[in-house]
Image (spheres, helix red, strand yellow):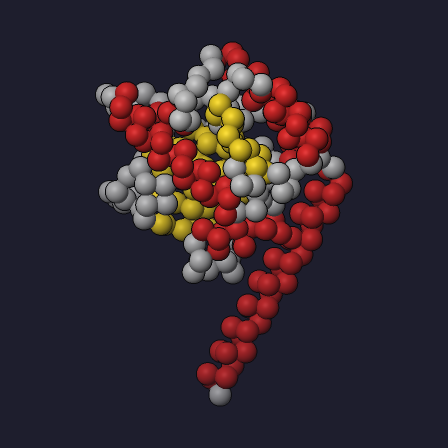
Length: 237
């Protein structure tokens, strides 16, 4: 492990975009990214802005993940002061919402040592622990899902309307009002948000979109491979 390698507990800003939107979403964050080979991890300085070393942006399994070191938020080491945690949390919150507006996601979440379920997993009734601090897209989720989630959240957590969706937060460093939910409350709220999303989506439609995306990806990769072979033959001749 070098000094440039991320270590410790990871904090991840993860967005489920689906396979068809994966390459365009990656380019929305890294305009010059080579998207010919997916999955991929790109090292980007100041991707979140928590550490001096390059942070990571990963495109994999229909998800865009922006990754950094999250020790400040989980009690690793001596731990930061309250003001330091607030400052780091504000960076995470602003970057998360900024990226949510750039990528064409269904939903996203701020995760610390957790994973974000796919729509298929939510539709199957996964008991999600990922939606404590999350973004839901008004562009891609049914309006009924957004309204049901807002009704369920009520005043329990911080809610912010963005240009293209809603941001929900229960962890004080990740919201301007420092709003907090106790552990049992936010675990249940997260599970309920995941259930509402799963119930509101059409698994058949999502499966068809995923298959189309994989087909398009295979065609693109095949075209790149063919062009490389043609160039090689030209150079030999």
